[in-house]
Length: 371
Image 1 (cartoon, rainbow, N blue to C red):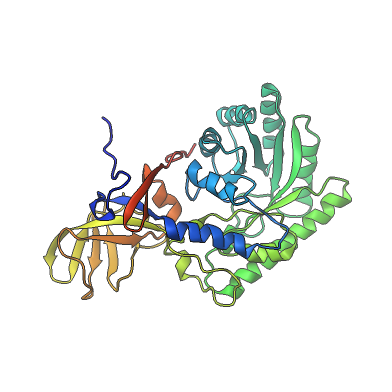
Image 2 (image 1 turned 90 degrees about the vertical axis):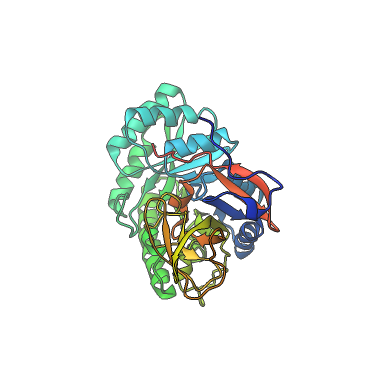
């Protein structure tokens, strides 16, 4: 059954159906520019993370402002980016399993593809897949710099993986993946700064061993919205993988940005929702629940209001009004998602709005691309 679109270009925002994912174009474009301005004069590359937006239209706008390409987490996301016209994609993750490896190698016939590895056996599998498809894959050693997720330990363990990559005929050792994801939402500036200092020390140790072994330095890539200027200032990182800066969800807004040097990005992504029930005096029920906004990083925030989003079930959100105006039956309000990435994955389109009118609908092409 064909799906009804939530909006059409030229429509007033007030007429857009709910729940919908709204992108405020003025705030979005401001965020794109602020990031570029914050990096002016620095010799560092930008490779935004497309897992935040899953949309080639956004990726191409980032590249038009100087990004060298994008990164993503899954082969299916990479396929969506390449099909959408992005020529340079880093899968900033390990790719394991015959089916995924074949798709990755096949994609390298269409675009420049880089992938991460933290295991010698996986390196051999990558080499075999690349050989089968007649391509050369760039491979980064993923180093655990504090996130304690994927990644080999820094120093000798990382060197061994780098040497395994360099020994393969169809792989090219390309450098280090060094993303400290655990630092991004540490609330205090000094906590984030300290975490990145430790990551930089781990990278420097590893680079020294790699260069002593006669391997090329390659590039060091990583960083996120909460810390990217710290990585940039280290002069060790060559490439920044910021993602959420374009949207700025409610959880990022809880960070302390004072004296961090980071620019203040604006909230540009909203869930548009309707008040569907008002049976209690200080409570409004809206039509945006768990299927409309991810709550893994906390409840969404009601934009520009002292009202509080209390809880969510599948199709309902409960808002404590706190005497705030504008919650009559049928009123539409904006919610700031707690976590932008999984919220985006719930929708087919961005409803792009400027000056109260719909300017465009951008398909979220990589929605559901989790394999």
